[in-house]
Length: 127
Image (cartoon, one colour):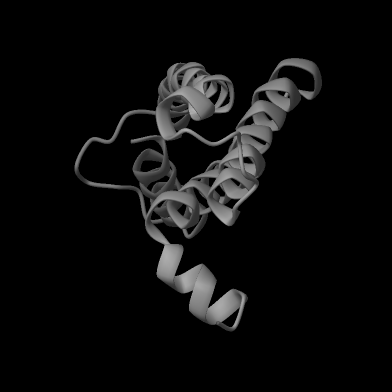
């Protein structure tokens, strides 16, 4: 949801920079940004739960200890991106385009981790 929200905010921001004010009564960007970071915070908490439960319970669930496959590495990288975004927002005041780029990057990594198995194997790893 946060990635879709970030894409819509990017489109709205581009319209505003071009001087084309949206006729549909879109909320202010600061309101949308606050909603984005609430969504990212909840998503980060759920992603943390998913990643760490997978790390701690993988042997019980699958009968083998944690293996560092591309799925695990990409999921952890995504977790680091979202965590970095939240830390950057808190300590450095990141907002706007920086926040949108980090959000879309984290989502892309998650998308590759969970849906891009064939893409990673065939295109990135050349198998």
